[in-house]
Image (cartoon, rainbow over all chains, first blue to last red; front, top):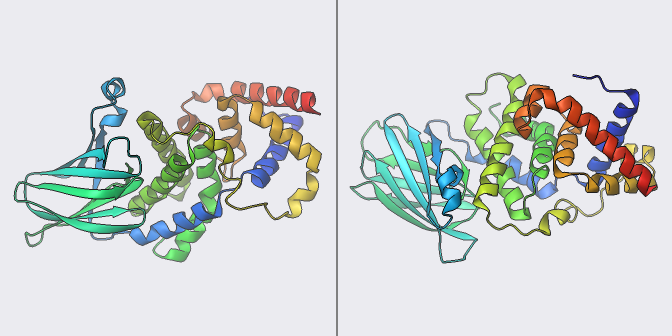
Length: 157
Length: 170
């Protein structure tokens, strides 16, 4: 790696000051980042996002296909279909979920401005709407005693 | 890492870096805000797993980049003219700090105008190189999707172009 010349270093310093002054991090975003700590969950098992059809090459070719998110935690898989609440509507979503292995659960939909809870039926299916577009995470609580709560990784929908 | 105050300090320390990654992608205002928020929420969920503070800058910049690519793929809510205004109106005029004196108004305007005319790739790289805390070249490489060996030459080329543009403006 070539070392920076004094002139390069000076130019980068000027650039840093310019960016600092003309394009600071918006205060509202810093506030939102601080507030995100309140979503910390200690006792839940994290379900990582293992697949997002939006990142598949095929999905780019057929953008009309619904987006599918797959989360995995141990033996449990959660598949969530994301669709606009209405055609062309970009601010609210409808989520259709399927838990595998299928079983009932209370599913808390956590989103940018709050949360609400829906029930997954005995087949592990649930439906949540309207969900504001933006980051979401789902917390699944099961009826069986001792079964840990599963919380999905945050993802923007 | 267990309390809100420690978290606020962490946000304070890494905000500029995450913002540099987000601003290095051409996102609309809503998408940029979503990527930003998702990145911090991801960090909250991973706090217990990231034991080594040295990895934090690299982890945050890579996570932010992946989320940028995700929303770009989704191609939603993109309004081409929006990104121009992002970050300018939300805070009003920044309060002049001690550093402002170092940078005369005309010089700042010339640098800003020249920077805006650079390619997206150059803007993204230079933003990341001047953001605090600094990244290693491996981390820069991951955050921008360019090979480690390409960073030095690209940096040289971008700075050269910036100089030419500043001279042309002055």
